[in-house]
View 1 (tube, rainbow, N blue to C red):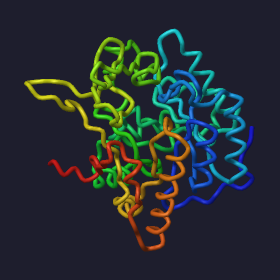
View 2 (cartoon, rainbow, N blue to C red; view 1 turned 30 degrees about the vertical axis):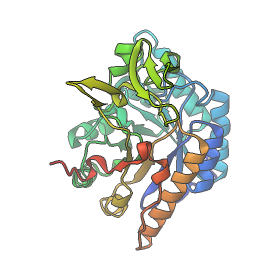
View 3 (cartoon, rainbow, N blue to C red; view 1 turned 30 degrees about the horizontal axis):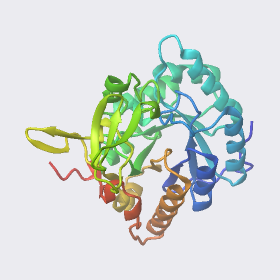
View 4 (cartoon, helix red, strand yellow; view 1 turned 45 degrees about the vertical axis):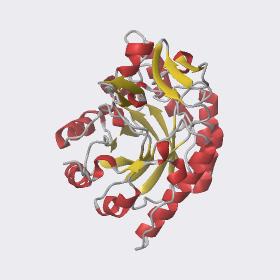
Length: 338
């Protein structure tokens, strides 16, 4: 087990960054991440895509590299165990403790109990997948399992985040600031399972690669399908994102459009000063399925913005090129639709 020789002193707002590959991990550290979060290459990880994530051997090496740089590494074991297969998730917790992870990010109550009982010195963070958004829920999880940090769901306003942070102290809060969004309640999405038989909550993947098909039609257009369901059609040469049901385009009432959610990225960068003032402990970037160039760019921009805000000045990150669909929203942080 490896640990940093001298853990870095807490910062007013730590920057927690994604890494789906060793290259992305190195990019995050070099760009200024205070902590990096990764997952194992199996269903225990909510970004369970082919070619991503880490074996136990690779994770041990990743922890060692991160610690040599004086940073922290968190391991996301943030799906819910399938009945009869709990040993797979237990083994992931064991592997994380053996690797020397600074924390594990868990959503399932049974896994929290297992980690507390078998690895009492392992720091526990509550995943956003647990959807804990009330003082009572967070206090219970802290008292029952020793949870030390909660990643809050992306449905709270800045005022609500601030009030909740004060109410649950000394439990730390962490919030998402940039990246992909989902219209479903955290940890409750079943759309993918209806079409593919696999749920992101238990299999760790939304729109599994084996179900994705792109077909070129006679006129040159490209259709995107999940199994036998067409969920989008793009003109020849136009950009096409990874197909998911919630961001598909469908025809209804004579109109074709995005019925659930348009491709848009969360970007809460302009709330950084307010999050610091509100006592939030960490800011999280989404994107373990993205490449190292994305990680390097987004992390560097947020590092600059956070440091400027702490120093008393502030400039917004320039991240238009990294936004899904070229558009961004602050989401629920200011909830302008009220």
